[in-house]
Amino acid sequence: MEDPEGVIGFCHRVRPRLVGTLSLLCGDGDAAEELAQETLARVWLRWSRVRELGEPRATAWTFRVAINLANSWVRRRMAERRARARLAGQAASAHLDPDPADALAVRQAVAALPRRQRTALVLRYYADLPVAEVAALMGCAPGTVKSLTSKALTALRRVEGMHIAEEVTDGA
Amino acid sequence: MAPEIREQLRRAARDPRADLDEAALRRRVRQLRRRRVASTVTAVALLALLVPLGQAGLERLREPVSIVDRPVAPELVPTTATTSPLPREPIPSPVPDPVRGNRPRAGSAESRAFGRLASELRRCPGGASVPADLVAYVWSREYQRFWMLAAKQPRAPETRFCWTSGLFDAKAGFSLWGARRIRSPGAPLTHMGGIHPGFALIEGRVTKQATHVRLRFRDGRPPMDLLIIRAGDRYPTNFYVGFFLQGPTSPAQGGWAAATLTALDAAGQTVATCRVGPPGDGTPKCPGS
Image (cartoon, rainbow over all chains, first blue to last red; front, side, top):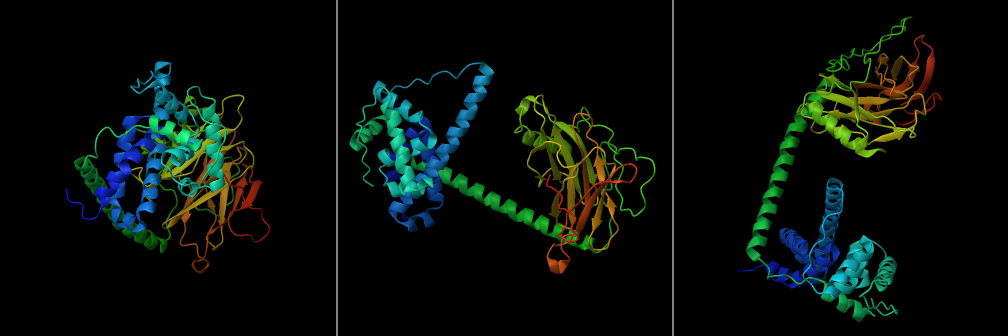
């Protein structure tokens, strides 16, 4: 298909990292695919302005959209779960995950983190964004990002199946 | 340490199941574009509708008009501008009781408006477990709006109560309603005002001791007795509401027309008085509702 403006190429380049990031933020692979698709559609819709930002900032903007969508999705799903639990008198049934146990443990541990810690950790260590970029995306100071990731790592160290060394060095 | 966590996260993250579905993406972009166009068209249409309405409102300012003129339910006595002395006998309440059980017809604008207010009240203590009461609503044919008051009584040991009100048009659209408020009875007279094209709304809480709430103006027009809404035994306070003519509030245009509020008891004695306009003669400012 033609791609005179470069938007399809950009979508191809950014999508794998976007799906991965969203799967860690949402803890749900299917939702991650859908949210990534929605994010890219919104990028496309505003491409004439987004491309003027240049690739790094366009990517950052794309992640900002994705984080907003993921936050809305998580809030919606929590409300649905509460409603379902109220109706059924019990928590919703567990989701069957076909992935290996260690991946599942990591995903569950990440999903259990507070929202901002999870966002900081995933953007920093999965999406590989520099601290300054993560701070800009989260609307906070770089020091806050470092503090959030440090707390997230401390929490993950307590989880069985997560092997993370004690030393934290932030190379941003 | 960073490589370890990176590796673990990479293993835990999902890879896309398939390549980018360009056709689906294009479809979604087209859908979003159509939605954006539809929103723009709607906004333009609404603007086209509102501008003449605003002009009509300004036209009305040139003639004297009455205030609340057509109560619908419950049967409300219209408020009137008055300079006459208070009667010796107490005036019967225009709203004898809360109108619980007298809900508006399902699907009506009033019913939808109540739904919105009740939804607002669900955020108060007690959540959805304490039902909201429709205390009263009153129409103004002159301004093509109705004002509605809903409240939620406290459940012991809670002593605070929650109320909210709104101003709605005939379709319950473009409604403006206040956020929930949680207060102990507190001050005997409180106030909140809102300016709309061509008119202003004034509302608040008033002690049950008062039988009249009189609004005085800064521009020389006669004082106005506002409508008292009796909330019944379930609530520790009554309410009041009134509409009055109000143009733009810039100093050049005369500013906010209202000056003071006075709550009077049946004997005509002042229960509370406070200022709703700019400072002047030292009258204390009315606390907010």
